[in-house]
Image (cartoon, rainbow, N blue to C red; front, side, top):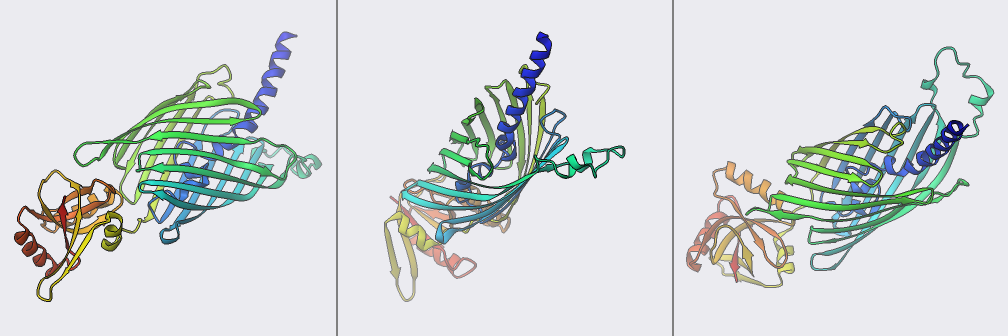
Length: 400
């Protein structure tokens, strides 16, 4: 008799855990944060992103899942728009959701950004016809009129704070409003800090604390650390309070990224959710627009324009740091993110130019430079050579 009660208790727990895991798995927490926090779409520096992920497992909770996330940014308006589509099969049942995302970013002050997002769409729970074999009469009244088949509206919100592309704090409730009778509020919260190392700041370490909770299942805590070189290669190690181990790795180029994450559960209910393989493919279709030189001047706060009829040139006066120390630099391009500056410098290097990067201390703006000198007259001459050849927008950075 005790065994019967134990089986019944585990069955009831599995049903509750199954519903509690809807948001956890559907929102693809292992990769893009925008999948569970709508405000993060506007925090991405890329103007158009397409993210595809799938999960494969052999447990009772789910057998397979597909997740599609697409979003774009209108940088001048600080506005992000996106769409999210999920479908998941759990033996007899299948669930599908489609949502629209909108986010707005606000610059509080230098290096500080606050983002807000909303999501709304529909969620469908139905019968997976592929689960039945040829001996099942699919015209059966129970299958055709299954009370568990339902379509409902759902909506939620997300908020995030970013500082200097290092500190990240997020909070979201993606299923705050639902038209069905059951109310399972789900909450996602995360804190992460990214520290870069090396002369070019290409190597990084990012520890993160992630918390997921709902009213019908225990709160889950996740601690992890990611180590990588730009977006070319990364490794993630971590674990969850529900006795789940996480191992992830991936990499890519500026326009495409591939990732894999393995989840292994060691709890007493591992038969329900023993292991899961997550595979992710992300396309950065349109990179973020580079900062124009005039925008950089406004951020720097100090500018001097010298417009001599014979020797026109511009000077930006600011404090910079670089592996090459000098009083003056010849700059040709500027970027908010270092990876784009490095990509641009590589292109100049391929053309035979001696390109390097300098970084503004106060703003964090990265400048691609092709020359340097301690003498003002010499740097003017070098600037004019570039301006009259292939870089008409070249200007001088005075390091002060």
